[in-house]
Amino acid sequence: MTDQLAYQVTVEELATLMKRTAGVHVEPEALRAQADDGFDTFGLDSLGLLGIVAELEKRYGLGLPEQAERCKTPADFLALINGALKTGV
Image 1: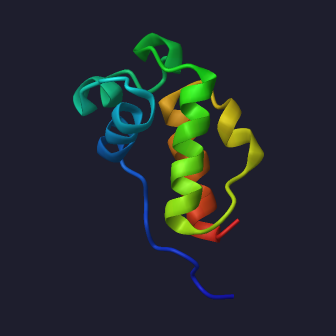
Image 2: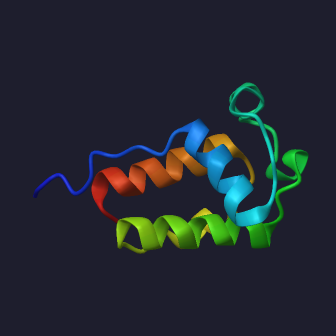
């Protein structure tokens, strides 16, 4: 089995995606400090999260796990996405 991708989505990139795809501005430092708080704390709804998932799928050319769209916190989302990118699933 080959290493599919050695890329990890960072907090900074997630903050950028939140702004670009959902219009939600959050500083990366605040996102990092409150990574276990719900996305709703930052004003991101499920449609905004779906847009982020779609952008990442397009960027990396692979389908991400369906549960990515249902993650409640940035920490959970990053763990799931980065795990999927690492394994290529």
